Image 1: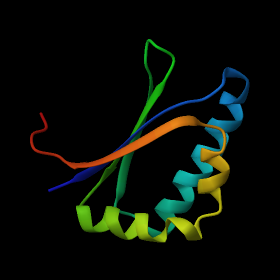
Image 2: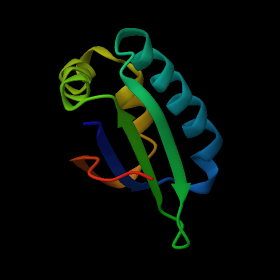
Image 3: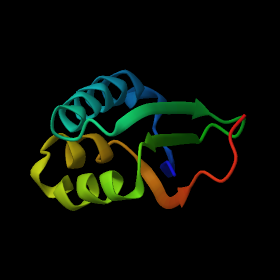
Length: 96
């Protein structure tokens, strides 16, 4: 069963372009070592916050990437531009 990690955070408008560049670099770096990352979706909500959902082939692959997160220098650089960040892990139960 596939797994997801969903983040919710805000990014100041002045930092958005830099955030998107850093996020893109982070995703590319993670995919190099963890090809189980199949898709990422960033959505701006009507309240201005963002949800960022990362889809993985399996929970084990997601867990391995999360365990390796401290080795990705892009991660703290990217998240430094966010505020009020939360994250939740889950598994896909139904997808149509």
